[in-house]
Length: 514
Image 1 (cartoon, one colour):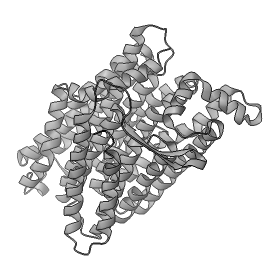
Image 2 (cartoon, one colour):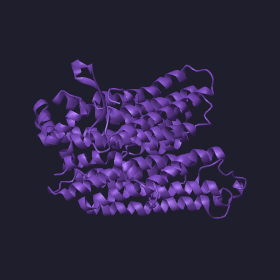
Image 3 (tube, one colour):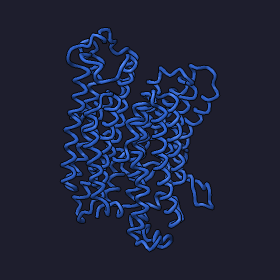
Image 4 (cartoon, helix red, strand yellow):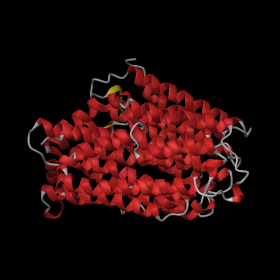
């Protein structure tokens, strides 16, 4: 496949499809075309997976062309194990969301076009290796997400979409300022070159020489620029206390859009930490490692506690998403810890980083599936925890399949949610024992609120209001069957996915060894 621009085709395919949708007049064809294109994208992604060299940590399927030579900007795309895993997640969750969008009747051309634009932005962000190019796609994901919430959301959609836009735009501006400073110091937007400069310490020295703001030392200046970039990714992930936009946005967004937000867009923040912050600012992260670890603990524990007191099912799962992404941040931050030059520590860091990437994929799949079930409940009339009770008696298939997804989110061994969390804790505990031990409280709280959710919806006396509650239709069963099956496959044989990114994460850990 050498020389074939597969990544460019994969990225442009949804964008071209979106443009075609906007010109359609027939209201049924847009959905069919969008679904068809999403499956073509899935096929192309599987083709990438099939031809990917799992033993190599290097960037593969590289496409590189001069773009804006006066600014040293190139069209530079490629994938390693980290990128490819998230491309695969995007290619899986997008058709799930499109298939769950059957009830969209208002402006369907625009709705499906915006989802395809969002998918294109995600594909571009996960493959771009030049910051200029990467930032364009990063911003492209914001615009369709904003309009999807604003036009098709719930009663409070205007306030929720505005809050989402302001938070993410503020983070993006801070991120842009940070990388303009990096460019001013180095003269390049190339993320591979910048990563090497960050690893060797050359980046901090260059910023001091070229910028030299107000007599700041190299360490202080690096911390200032790191803080700006950190804000952009902390908002997108989100990390507490930069999370307050998320519950309202997830609650008010139409359920298929919430599937995209939780399954894919939140992964952009963690990806940014791994692809940009970790390689470029390892010393700055180490300098503030203790506060970062405590923020991760707060994200895990406080979000789980917040989920306990919610009465709206969407808000419960929104805080659950924050909780699960907190584990990713715990594993990521502990990997930066200063350790002795001993191979054992590289092994622990590799375990933690492997757990982070696996958790990203597994959370994206499981959370999107759970919100799909919430969509089925909404179509039947309600989504409040107090509205139901005893559904297992009249809808056993619905409760059984949703129960599997809940147990996956809980981290039950044998399902996909277990191994990612296990690897994170396995790697993090030797590196940061106290914060990891405190984070374990989040596991207990997660179990409590998820089991409470099951108890209040599935068990107890049947609410007579739902005596005619319909079990899953054949179409709905076919929709949830593939992700449920994948939860079992990855729970039993996680190496199927870990093999994609293990070499990449091993190299990341080696670069953070000392």
